[in-house]
Length: 78
Image (tube, rainbow, N blue to C red; front, side, top):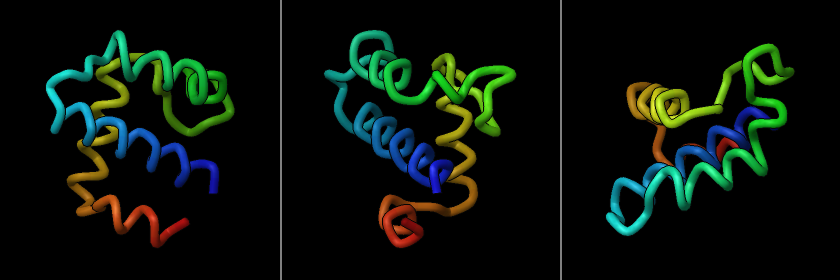
């Protein structure tokens, strides 16, 4: 359940960044990820994947997009 929630948060945040040019990774997204996700999502952490930098979070988003997951799909799984 926590994994689905984490993926959902990242998916929503990155979709907002990609659709609104006023958001940036360093000012807007990274602080949210670091405050809420990175305590578990780091190399050697208890979470199954790391979310410590832009490339790792972007990779996760691309994986979700490749799997055909949309925001509505993520809400249904919760």
